[in-house]
Image 1 (cartoon, protein in one colour):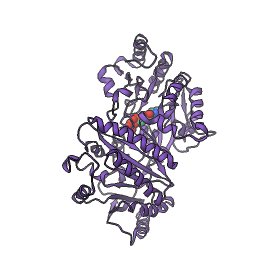
Image 2 (cartoon, helix red, strand yellow):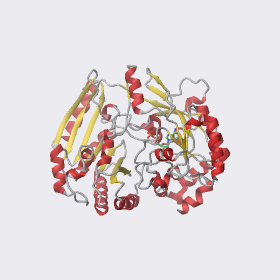
Image 3 (cartoon, helix red, strand yellow):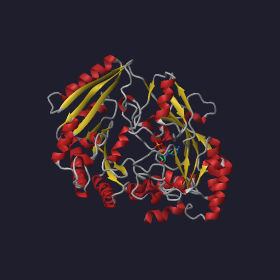
Length: 517
Ligand code: ADP
């Protein structure tokens, strides 16, 4: 297998040149390697199969790889750790691209006093957590639900966590980037050689570029600055359960103002019963019926595990006096409302770690939800962004729930409450060995995109298979944003070697073909 438009002989030469740059042992081009770097949650992993992978160990090696890639016109798909399951894992959007695996680059430099870290892409959430623990550094991470990926890759793809620092890309402060021509740039205050405030002041002087390297294919990030939260004195909050689907509306209207005004500083996520249940049990324990689960089975599962139709966890972080006051305000807001169950949660400095993403501890148990159907399981998410309004949330829920029913899937939705937005994460759990289910999954996904688009809602992040589809919904002024992205792409990357197709941005040579498709 070779990258598009490159003969086997020429590709062989390119692989030799890559080997000369980074050592032959760090060039992976066997069949097993390709499979290892493919998307293990894909309906058909051959569609986005890479032709090889390269694992450089330093910035200089990344630059050398980029120079060779330009010479041979080899497309590179940079990943940090490539654990981005549900969005494509390590696999590239363009079949035959060469994966640039940065997971060997693992340096960590913490500024304890100012609460920042400068890290290389290979640093995983578990690595950074261990580093902070081993060195008694009183700083906390914000981690995503499945925390086995990299801190940098997650922030660059706008991943989310559960503490007040949960909007990861918003906490980026300063990048080092290898540009598509092999040049090296540092953004923000890092643009000054020996500058002392690279991780402290985000804007820099003149235009700021950090956001340009998020969800884009304009460069390869080799160092990422990130702000970390001081370990708080206390974390207090409530775990809430709600009995009815329609409780969603009033809960959103209750939480949205508290969130906007900063009483709640993290992004709480209201999840349907299956979010809790899918990591505790498997479907075949309850029924053989292939269709979506009916109310009686749902009721039985909820009873066994004591979960509401919806569950919501709210947390406040900080000095004891402040969290106590914030919790009083939250409890007042839910007073006399139809709450099925409310349990207080409390953690104080000195207690052993609570062991959940709400307290910045990395976990990987949510991966278990891929076993829901049995077989080789997987999932994909469709996550449009809505205004934070209860009636709109209910309408969104009802329309989406009806689509889950129509395509024969069990509803698995959640609503994450941002400062001024509501992200409706719809998980679709599937069994890759069930061909009919995988066909329905594709049609279902496309129906979800069309449905949200009709309401004026766009998705915040998507799987490699659907990057063009989702990009096409951002269609103001005949696709003006796409044209802007393409202009920048052409200026920075005339040979089109960095991540062709990432977020629907294609280099000139592949553009017509991609737009037609
Ligand atoms: P994780 O290790 O957290 O699972 P990935 O490495 O899969 O994250 O990264 C998610 C996506 O972000 C990748 O598919 C890629 O498009 C982009 N990305 C990750 N790391 C980099 C990087 N260092 N430079 C540029 N883009 C990156």
